[in-house]
Structure formats: C-alpha cells, structure tokens
Length: 247
Image (tube, rainbow, N blue to C red; front, side, top):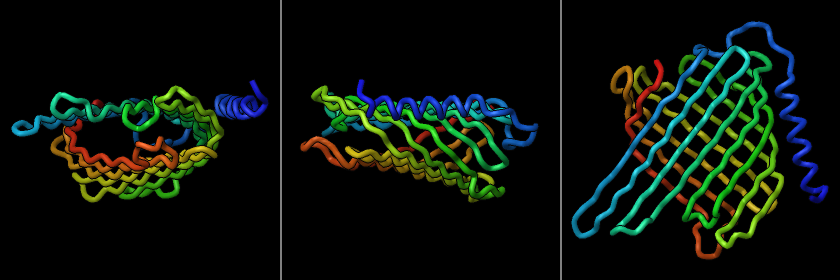
C-alpha cells in the first residue's frame, strides 16, 4: 500500500483514538433528552391503468444519548418499478458518534455507505472525523455545523475502484414552526479530487398525535463526476407516515 493511502488512514485512526480517549466531562446537560429516541417512516405509491407503477421508501433513525456521548444510526431504502421493470433502487446506511467537549462543541466520527443501482456507482462509502458546533440553540430554532476530513472509496459499475481523501462539511437546521409543525434542512458535502457528493434534504413534518406524524420531504443528490450516460443530479419527493419509537 502506498504512503499516499497510509497517511489518511493513519490520520483518521489518530482522530478516532483522540475522540475515544478524551477525558470525561463534568456532569452537565447535553440536551433535553437522555436515553433512546428515534422514528421509523414508510411511504408507498401504486398506479394502475395504462401504466402500472409502484414505489416504496422506508427510513429509520435511532439515537442513544448520554451526557457525554451521542450515537446516531440512519437507514434508508427506496425501490420503484414501472410495468414490471425496476426503475430505482437505493440503500443507505450511516452511523455517527459524537463526543461532547463543551456546552455547544463536540467531536464526531462518521461512517456512511450508499448503494444506488442507477447512479453509475456500484457503491460509495466514506469514513470521516472532525469538529462540530451547535451554532444556534433556542426553543424554536437549532442550527449545527460540522467540518472534518476522511477517506472515501467508490466503485463504478464497471468494477473500477477509486480511493481518495475527502473534506466533509455538514449543516443541520431545525425550525419549530408551531407546536405541531417542524421544518428541517440537512446538507452534506463530501468533496475529493475526483468527485464531490452533495445531498440536501428539506422536510416538513406535521404531527397527527403523540405517536404519528406526516413527513413531506424533497431530496437533491448530486455527484460532480458520473459515467457519460448518467445524470449528475437526482431529486426525490416523498410523503411518509412517521412513527415515533420512543416518547
């Protein structure tokens, strides 16, 4: 293995070690909720007549939080077909651990893997670490920003593989419009020399009762480098029924 590949792996290992070995903090409030939280969402459409099509999208988010640590798991799946021919198929898994440094600052380590049959990539996966900060934290508005670096591995449909160092930036905005309405905007950018991935998710969640809510979302996914017969940008509009696993 070349020094070019060893160096980023060594830096990431040191960053993860520092995250794990950071000294414990004095007991203080990490957020309003300590323990388990999460939700699961499902959406489906079925069209019949001159054209028969169906689609299914599912997502789940699980989080466990203490006064010093926060662990978040995100899973997503989307499939679709038209006249018995598959037209979309995507799977995503992401895991992130945050280690609190102060009232608003934290270190993070993140792992993300994506497989999209129609993106031109067989898979894309990345490991990164860095620094995050809660820039705004009010009862109605929260904004957090993250920056770091890592290593990404991509494999194209022709089985050729790419490995490169990336810079990672992320932003998460949440606005409580009312007691029953919440707007969120999540942005992720993973940029390397060969390709830059961008994912932006806008969502409006309307609470029905203590357990259920409706979520309307619009997702934009962009890769700067794709095979010649593929589009650079995909957009997904979804309506889901969301169930809160813990209250």
